[in-house]
Length: 72
Image (cartoon, rainbow, N blue to C red; front, side, top):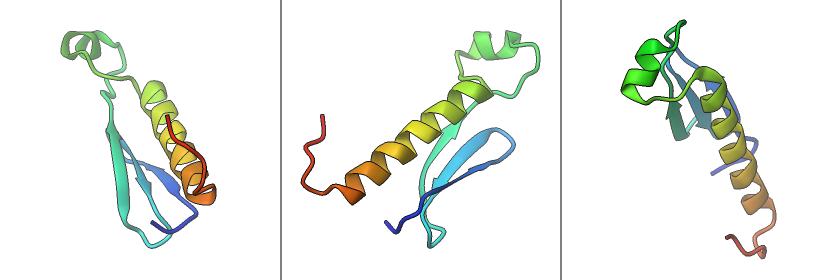
């Protein structure tokens, strides 16, 4: 994994990739405007998915830059 990590939004996902363009993870969400379909399918909304992608990217960046740090 090469830093920096990038987050890009697609139609119904946020993709976290490294500096070389390798996909590290994808967080999928339901883009329904009214939320009813999302509730029925028990899926994340766009804001929740973006927050998770950001947190994962931050965690991976911190772990890569502080190799001696213990992870929970």
